[in-house]
Image (cartoon, rainbow, N blue to C red; front, side, top):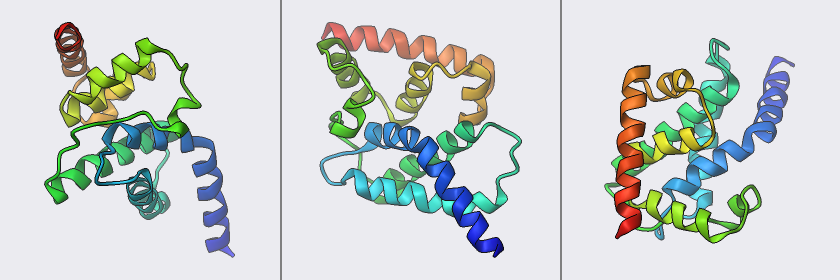
Length: 159
């Protein structure tokens, strides 16, 4: 009976926070991997970690951390680097379809993996303290890195 309760809780949590998972994996998808590949890896890792979730942080923070670590690890293991990130239909449903967002996503796609993770969390209006917790760095480091990423995006957009 306990196993069924855990499965139900997990599936309810996944339904509620599915948008976060898709948003993260959309930043790391490339032409060699479908969203399904990354989604499956993220969900598997969430499932493995779910029984040990101590609720010391928000569920969304925990999901971001696992999703980001899974995507980064996926590319480290496969020694592939995404060359292009396109906004999928699933993600478009959550964002306004306009040229500015498309241009911003194209610029973000040119950033490194960790820079993309930071800017994703920043664009999600996550507090610096939560970003620091997710990324495993200090709040001051988050602030510094985000300012550098903003400058880098300005330079990329001018090209």
